[in-house]
Image (tube, rainbow, N blue to C red; front, side):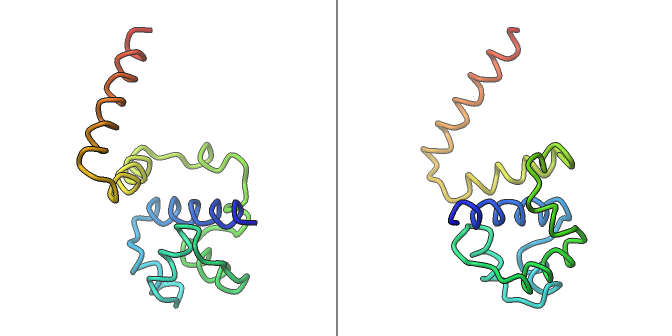
Length: 114
């Protein structure tokens, strides 16, 4: 069950960023508290069907969009992926971000050599 909660949270975050909403904006549109949106996105909060419906309506998506196996392939957007990456790193230390940056450079160098 925990994996499902985490997956739904990640997908809510993806679609929120895809629509260009902050957590506060989505919360206002869905009539829930912004800290609740943050908890959902981190997989820390369970979500009722009623709240799930409010959130998907605010995001202008179908609830089934949150459960699709290949949802990223459906609406992948470079800007959203970059925002997701930035959000992932935002809680990390400068040293950790430098390590990730160096690893990314190495990986891109290998890709470019192909």
